[in-house]
Image 1 (spheres, rainbow, N blue to C red):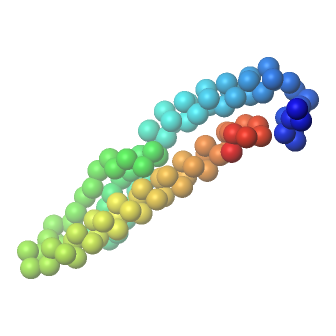
Image 2 (tube, rainbow, N blue to C red; image 1 turned 180 degrees about the vertical axis):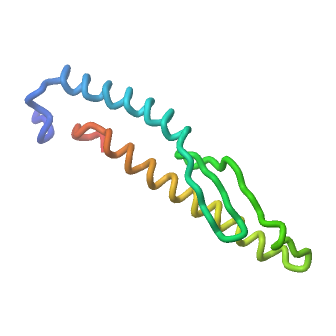
Length: 107
């Protein structure tokens, strides 16, 4: 049986150790991300997300609360939530990719 390119050299124990280190770092990263704060400012709507993409808080300027135009406020809220989630998950994915071991087949 032919092993995948880049698989040899360190042997199975070395690959296993590398994977275990990556898992420990991933757990630590999750804890760090939960403490991070990402601010999204859409003018009268401001939102705070943690690094995992969970919304922490949302603030709405009372001056934009117009009973005749609730749709505009809803659009601002949706936009803030989308931007916050996208920003947080993109940053998270980049950091996860940086700690993944270079092991063939792990992706």
